[in-house]
Length: 132
Length: 132
Image 1 (tube, rainbow over the protein chains, first blue to last red):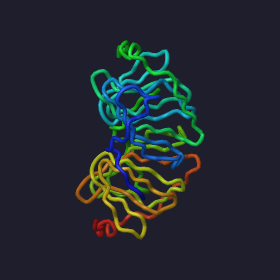
Image 2: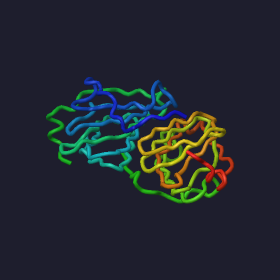
Image 3: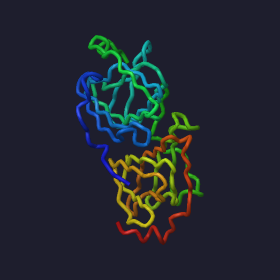
Image 4: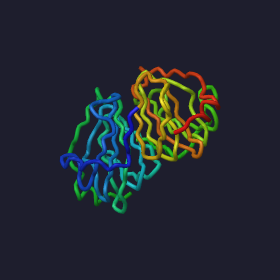
């Protein structure tokens, strides 16, 4: 076996796909185990862009309180202990809340066949208007 | 999306495959997302039987201190924060340590194609002789 640590915060996430202070600790690389798995640490107010996964995604919230929103639906609060199952091809974003940082494990199954499409940023106007 | 909780301990694990007090909270069922994912909570001294996975397995230790051993190798201590990558087809077991309970997320990728073989229990003699 090989051992690493999911406590490490990892590297700054690419500004093309995220807004604000976001770090990613990639736990599996190059489709190892045919799965993408990483720890994503969002600062207060930080978030992903809108995006979709053809295979869906599973989040395990391991710290803090954050937001999750699907296009056309109200934002939902997600908090430590929550398991979020995101359906395939649903446009959504996730991130920290206005008051709290948030950290989750993110898992994309069957990564060899998945296609993740990164879309528009969640603007400050969109983010500030969420009313969970 | 659908939401559940990984804080729930779930149900008593089947005595055919585990020794001692072990609970399993299955987070994905019926090959949903082509992945098996669950939270396994081992009491002090509790453990899996020896077993193998044709696709390997990933563990995220979320609480406590436990043991992990591959056939013919010394036992290794695993603790909160560790990510354990178990290779395919390697006979191994995991569980709580003598002094502490342990809880991990367990992920079997590509579950539709995985075959997990459950083998002999880790006897009290084997367990008590580990010297990490």
